[in-house]
Length: 126
Image 1 (cartoon, rainbow, N blue to C red):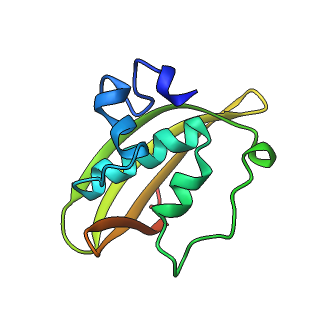
Image 2: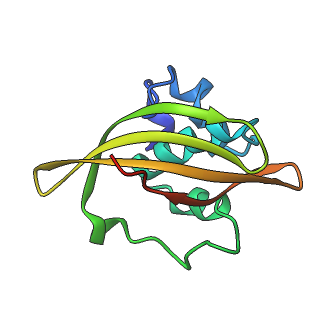
């Protein structure tokens, strides 16, 4: 259970003082904080949080964690451009069926009615 964690999955320190506060209802102050909290929510399979922080124009109806079969291993934030829309470039490491992968994405976030929302992402060519 998320409340039993001590280390935050995003690597930002203590879970309660990092992503845990956003998972418990505090608004993320910026796009990078929201992106980190969404990564942690994927690790913890917090579907309601992920859907609530996804912009309604691009949000799926639901998420299927079991079909993905991913085990998240770590997060590295490369860049954060705090505009509106803001962008956060990151690399998330994960495993599927024992094989390691990297998700390199530049995500866009918009600020609406006092809250940040994930809008969409692109995969840079590397």
